Length: 211
Ligand SMILES: N[C@@H](CCC(=O)N[C@@H](CS)C(=O)NCC(=O)O)C(=O)O
Image (cartoon, rainbow, N blue to C red):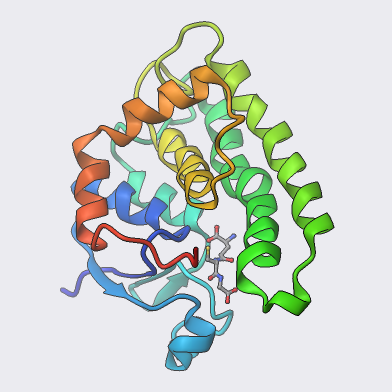
C-alpha cells in the first residue's frame, strides 16, 4: 500500500503537517517543492488545482488545509483531543484559529512586504495586518497565563503544533519581537522537541519563504 503524500515547501504552512507526522510517527511520502509552486512548479496544479501547499494525497482524496491534515494525522493518537475530553471544544477552536485567524493576517504581511514586486507592495496593508496578527496572538499569551505548559488538555496536542507554526512564520517574517514572554517560552519548549527538530532536518533546515 502506498504512503500518503505530503507536498511541502520548506518553512511554509505545510511545515505544520511535516512536524505533525514526525510527532505522530506517521510515515509519509514527502515531496518538496519550490515556493511558490504556482510559479516554479506549474505541474503541481494537476495535484492541487488551487496551487497552494500543503497538499495531502491519500486513498484517491486530497486535503489542502494544513489544520485538517494535522487533524487527520492526529486521529487515533494522544495528539488528538477527543469529544469525551473536557478540552475538546477549546482544542477545536485552536486548531481552526491557527490558520484562519493567526496565519491569514501573516500572509498579507508576507505578500505585501516580500512576495510582490516592489512597485506593488502595500506598506499600509502590511502594517494593518501585522496589527491584526499581534492582537490575535495575544490569545496565546492569555491562554498560558495560568502557568499551563500546553494550550489544552494538560498535554502536548496537535493544537500546539498548528498554533506554534504561526510563531515559526512570525520569526521568518521578523515580526515576533512583540509576542508575549509566555508565548515565547512556550514556543521555545515546542521547538526544542525532537519531533520539531527532525521535521526541520527533513525539510532541509532552510526556508523557501523569501527574505
Ligand atoms: N488555509 C490553507 C492555506 C494554504 C495556502 O495559502 N498556502 C500558501 C503557503 S504558506 C501557498 O501555497 N501560497 C502560494 C500561493 O498562493 O501561490 C492552509 O492552512 O493550508
